[in-house]
Length: 349
Figure 1 (cartoon, helix red, strand yellow):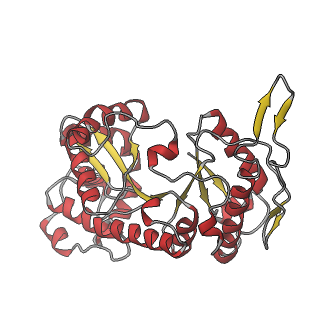
Figure 2: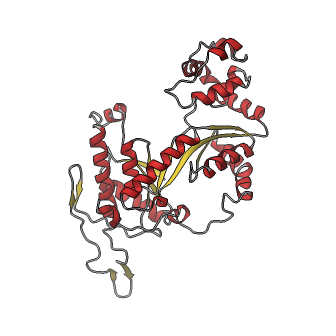
Figure 3: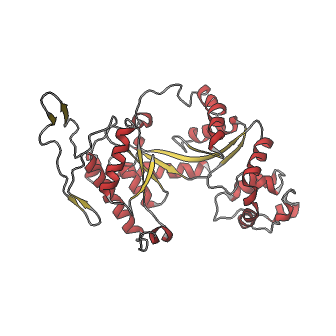
């Protein structure tokens, strides 16, 4: 699954690129369809970032147009009969002739269906606009949540959006992120994270003191917070990570170890043996806070192997992860329904 912005790309180019990838991967590709939101990104294109209304208005049009282009080559159009010389069925590769407020295309796209028909639509975002876009088009949502309650609320919002567009809410899967440092025990995992991230500690100390509302000193990294500091500390209501950060601080860890726990990273962090990651994932899954997870290991070179070797077998023993693949395409792996071209249910809205 690769990301392609709907804000600064032309629909025909995106349709061609992701459909070609889907063909080459034998039906195992997905498109993370997002809007761009930073002025620094817009500056690369010599413009200012459009308003949220225009960015998401364009995104809705771009995805519809791309799905129409994907379906412009008829599902059964390819004959490829070398003896007769017939390549396709007449009239089954047709223009789409769509024009909206933001984008348009005559079409058609000259690429046949893949083994899964067409790529899976993915979205990453948590705003009301994201709920509507994903609810209308996405089979998979990449989420960012730090508590079960937050993740459950996000998942519910996406599922309700899917229902508003006439879709079965089970067709949209919510997968929050999880960062992992898997080692034999907590101390070994913390030491590994310290080695990897200690160059960031000075600025992270500054950030942590804002999260907890107290003064901290990077010169005292090897010391735990004092009783006075802990008494004065209070979680920031503006940062959902701060409650967990204070909990770790109250366990008596040094300031360096508190940071090594990943309390200010951009997803929940597991620092310890594989069973801790498995327990976290099961707790969220059982609570209806996740349909799956996207894993971000600390170092891909051996972090992926550590997760596969230490976490996956536990999930398999608990009946939470499959032993073998049941299909061959990404759409099948996700349980996403078959689709080629536009979804007729969504097209009515």
